[in-house]
Length: 132
Image (tube, rainbow, N blue to C red; front, side):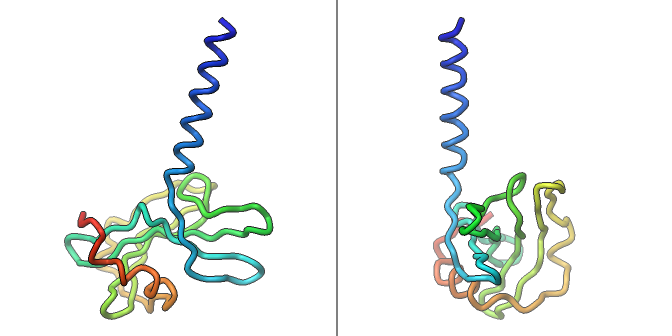
């Protein structure tokens, strides 16, 4: 029985480690007070309806051992970038204390100026992203 419990614990730990390792975050800007902004390269894709690049971005603070992370554990946003016009539509935001959801009407929102650093990091690879 102890072996079965130990094996189950080991499998659970391996799965948790694999899930954490599955996210690939790439830093694109320094923030205030030692924070950093990164985007999840595994989540990025091109929206079929608009041609915009959809990215998940998160804030981190390395000095406090807080890494960028997705919904459930991190703090960040999901945005759709128009690389040609350098503007962005906010699709949703997330933080541990609130449930994550995408605004169903995000395509009809008014675009805002995109962060130049995020555009410079994401747009050169837009042609290689999957279309969804």
